[in-house]
Each structure stands twice: as C-alpha cells, then as structure tokens.
Length: 156
Image (tube, rainbow, N blue to C red; front, side, top):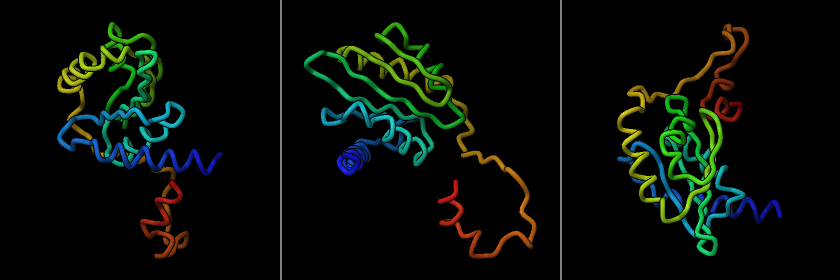
C-alpha cells in the first residue's frame, strides 16, 4: 500500500507540474485523478519547490464538492486567504503556512478570482526564501565535503 501511495503522489505531482503557470502569484491546480489523501503532500512539495502559495484540489463530481490543501511559504498567510474568501467556502481551517477547504465545484471560479485579487493586494513583495541559522560552524567543525549543497539539503 505504501508503494501504491508513493506512486500516486509521484503521478499527481507530475500532473500538477504540467498545470503550473510561472507568471501566477500562486500555484493552483486540480485534476479529477487527484486523491484527497495525498494532495497535502503534493501541495507542500510544490510550495517548497516554487516558493509560492499552493492550492491543490481533489474534485468529486458525484457530490459536487472539491476539497483542497493549501501550503505557503513564510511570506504569505494561508489563513488570511481563507478568511478573505470564506463566503465561498463550505468549510475551512488551518494556520499561516497550511490549510484545507471544502468548496462547491461551481464556486471554484469565483474563489480563484477572489484569491487572485487578494494575492495582488496583499502578498509581500519580498519572496526570498528565509533560512534560520541554528548555530555558527567553526572551521574545525566541518569539512568541504560536509558543506556540499546536496548534503545540506538532505539534512534540512
């Protein structure tokens, strides 16, 4: 089951990558094949990779609703975005960097317009990734090999 879940995640991420518009202030994708149990993982990966707020939907045409997972870098607040569009949502929750929502499929276009306007008015101009430094490394505490980017990224 874990192997199937990983494949589903990878397949969904590949589909999502093809839908991204690099000019948009946020990433917004959905597909009928997305499973609501893994969209949070895909949203997190894309938000991290592109340093943009990300919304991934899983639609259910039978019920007429979609659920979405939202993830965001530090410069934007998911919860502010949800509050700004709450009249269009059935349910929602979260905190600054992560959230979720349930929405009628018919309300998705209006939601997109609301969050586009909100993003243009409220997103901070500084979108650089920020890293917190835990401590200072002194020359005797590292080697050139231990400072290679690939090694650092694996530890983060």
